[in-house]
Image 1 (cartoon, rainbow, N blue to C red):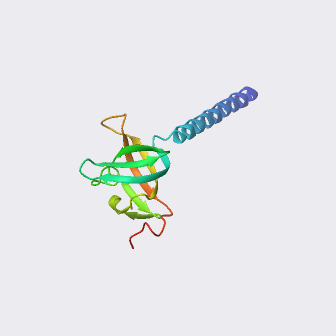
Image 2: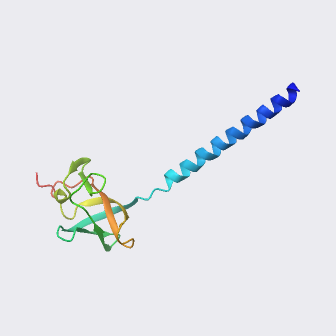
Image 3: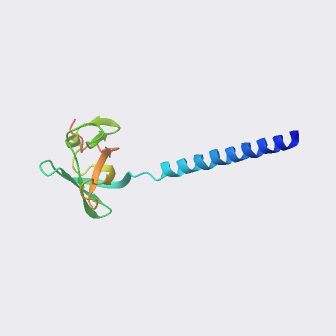
Length: 128
């Protein structure tokens, strides 16, 4: 009787570890499939504050992103220059930028720029 109890407890433990392992892998895969996409090596061309858009040159093509200048941090487009938070309009034109974007909530074919990072800006573009 004792052997069957040990065997059944062992089977339960193995099944529990298998479930924990499977759940752990499932969550890791879900985290790796992030909804935010990254546009690298883009150059900022134009800000249109009235229309709420930003145009960049990305891989030789002009791409338009929707931006939000106002609102909470979770809803607006945030910006950094050399890893320091700034206003979106402070980024100089023709600066190299990385853009983290999502499909727009209203029109899924358009892109919403969630964050704009300007890294290693040449000194001639900075207006300090």
